[in-house]
Length: 69
Image (cartoon, rainbow, N blue to C red):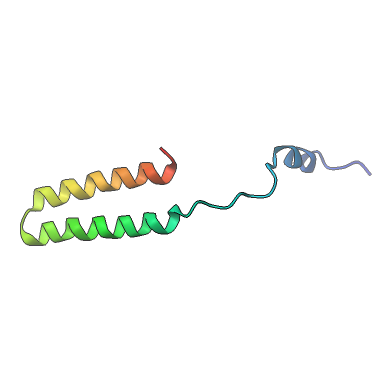
């Protein structure tokens, strides 16, 4: 019986065993939590525009960091 073509393609495209994941996953969560807490503190203290801008910028930076830019 002939081998399934999809399995053959899958084997050719498989890069092998996955490499160890970088240890940036936990650091990303810590940075996100600290940044969000700092911006929330700014909002509570009364500097709402700066806190809102900080949250927006940090969200964009963390998103870009997460997707690999």
